[in-house]
Image (cartoon, protein in one colour):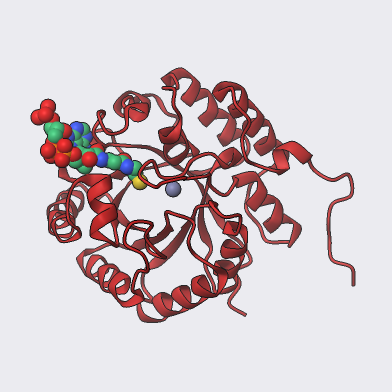
Length: 305
Ligand code: COA
Ligand code: ZN
């Protein structure tokens, strides 16, 4: 059996979630949310991104937020699009950089105004800078399962990108279904293909829920051996450069499923629900998460044998 006994849910609501909100959420409220997540057992956060404040004004407080976060219990990973972002993130003492590059030119241009080739050659300077400061770098490959602008994406093209970055020192690659186009059969196939050929690289799945099948995709990835998933409290987020982006997989929903199956997440479900309801109050609109609405069942689900 490939399926892990323990999984890590990386919390991306602060970055992927808040970047899609219309309103700027004050730094103080972001810090309160982080404290509530930490109390629920969250240890791995994608805390913010160091991008242009003109592109994503919602995260313009990245440096201030990083200066004020609690660091003992929490790993603060941050997204960067270019060398300037990497320098700012290192100055802010990020625990890890996540460089994001799309699998297609059309999405990469919409997101970071560069061709894939240009982003890939910029990456060399980022790896070298991060290496000098002993900061690990992961790469997130956006639209890895299909692109809303360009259509199908070739598995071998995505794999060549992953191999290129692994050779330059990426110890983790995130395969991102940025537009909710993946299906479980494709996820199983991609995961087996990539893990088999890059056994020293950790893989993470980032699955958007535009069409309601992200949880099935997550489960397919889990069965194929993945133990690291990006999830977002309350299910908020989605990519701002994708038409009809409609949410993420809710952390508390994924945690509920894993815990019900006896797979450890290290997370406290009651604490996550508290955090999701708090987030809903901060954002002042209903969130897509489901367990935060239904609550926990009185009888914990278990296997009948
Ligand atoms: N952080 C802050 N400022 C940045 C920056 C960064 N990482 N990268 C560039 N800038 C600044 C430059 O210093 C320059 O400022 P100036 O006009 O005051 O001199 C300005 O932005 C333009 O620089 P340029 O290199 O021409 O960038 P661009 O306008 O082509 O934009 C990106 C490119 C990557 C910076 C921008 O598209 C971006 O931040 N995209 C992020 C999108 C995103 O986060 N999407 C969601 C993630 S899935
Ligand atoms: Zn996302």
